Amino acid sequence: MKLSPIRTLALMGAALALCGAALAQTVPDQSTPENPLNIPANLQVFGKRDPNVRKPTAIVNDAVITGTDVEHRMALIIAANELKLNAEEREALRVQILSQLVDETLQLQEARAADIKINPAEVDSGFTRVAARFQRPVGEMRTYLRSIGSSERSLRRQIEAEISWRRFLQRRMVPVNISDAEVQSILKRLETQKGTSEFHIKEIYLTATPEREQQVLSEARALMEEIKTGKRRFEDIALARSEASTRGVGGDLGWVKPGTLPEGLAQAASEMEPNQLAGPIEVPGGYSLIYLVDKRQLMMADIRDTKLNLRQLSIAFPPDITEAEASNRVAAFSKAIQQIKGCGDSAKVASALGAEVVDNASIRVRDLPPQLQNILLKMQVGESTPPFGSKAEGVRTLIMCGRDEPTAGGLPSAEQIRNSVEDQAMNLRADHKLRDLRRDAVIEYR
Image 1 (cartoon, rainbow, N blue to C red):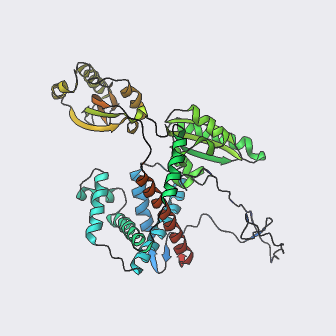
Image 2: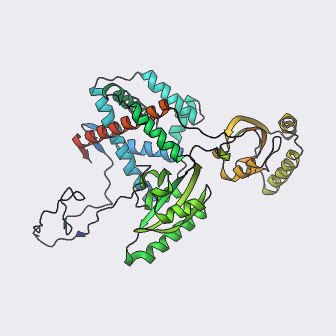
Image 3: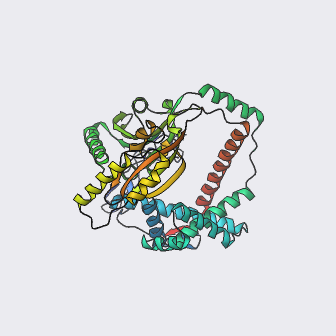
């Protein structure tokens, strides 16, 4: 659950090597609301599950998911998110992908059982939209998928499953009706929350028993150093090491209020700026590393919501250029852009430099790289940033052609609240339906 900071507790059992026949102990009934399965505290595990044995193929109600299906989906996710995973992280991702493919199979089967048919043109349209998000024509997208070890078939299967499941829910789920009294109650609550802070946080949580506290603390410090030095991404470490329920989404807690966080995390978050790291922070049961993605005050204007009209000038370097030649070109580029007198003058300078010109008429400051945000917020219309980039990617500058200051956010309308609550209720029903499908499915792993 992406928005929940509540951690899951894993029930750990030590596998015992059995010498000869063993007798299971008789344990008294311990069924409680916290232990509904009546699992004894002093359990004994008979047999051993070898973690090195991976079963890449699943048969879901007679539909086969192959290891190739898993690898193709993994390749797309790794490329789309530019992940750099070690062997342990790849294995964790593989488990998640197989689970996702099982869910997709169940959704497709349920939709087909309800006689829901998807026109191939709808899948084509979805494929075109995905290609556009990758900034590629459809034909080039097919080539790109093959080049990264994925396939067009894998992406089309995902698109078809999403369309089928959405249509199934629209046809079979009874609409949720929210009363006017409920809407007004939500509006009043929002009024009282205006101006309160929220934080978008990612967390890596490591449990620490008293016996292992110093070891875990050392591990947390080592992980922190790997993130700071750029050796590994925060999200990749969260996927591999975090023991929180948000592990599967790279440690993302989503937007949270300080009161929902442990005291140490709330205090750290309140003192941090976006794109900062903090930790290790002692919390109940262990230590946490946190990354502040963003912060905001509810229904208040935020300077980083300023919309900018930017013009980018960029020059590329040939692959065989030397460091000295690249430095000379950067120096010439830097000198030239200092002479730019606003966007109206930039075309002449770009022509003299042989630079490519790209415009973006409306981009929020918060959507730009952190290194540029503070620079741009202090610039006036007509000014340009210092050169930035690399030898491989080329060097560029941004010229500010205009800016629109943010306005204070007001309360959402009653209709917006109604739609939001109804959507949440429908999503919850959809989750319950998928849970039932998983429970009733016949799934075999080979």
